[in-house]
Image 1 (cartoon, rainbow, N blue to C red):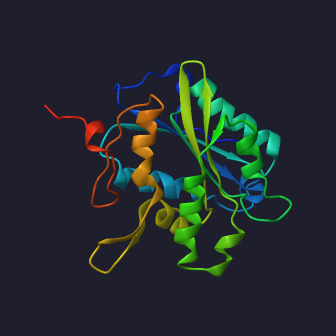
Image 2: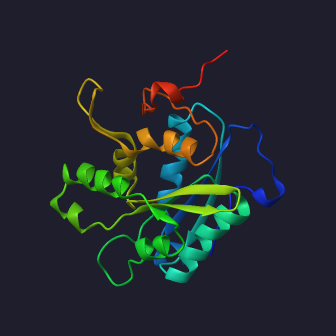
Length: 213
């Protein structure tokens, strides 16, 4: 089972800096209609608040099957042309949790810093964060590359991972992983992504910051 927000195979980018984001929610029961998926709506809501530059979403809801996960990642990157692919679910130690393996099976290079930071954030809340096997990686094909990141499955954990931890005054205590995503997209040849700093402040070296007219 899969869902699509739009049919991008027949759609062109509305702006040169429009980022195309693929969302993959991985759950046997949600994909079978046993319960409502929460991962995709949570991410769509978060991007609505966080991004200030143009963006477009493609979403898929699929079961915990390694081959299906890998094929879906390849579809979103190779066929649709997504610059960023985020998965939710399937990163624990149970035998049905195969998202990291499926991600690395179609990756060209791993980006271990993202997984390390995600676990550091989650450890502030629960000691079982060390059981998470979330990975991030690049998939590079001719003339295109994308960043793929495995996120937690719970909406609250998704937001915490992306935004990081803030104190009562809104000051950052532990950086969220999305602070580094726009610069990574720059480095692999993708669009220039800008964010709403009240949600997440992007970090770029001064030499990489675009001068606005």
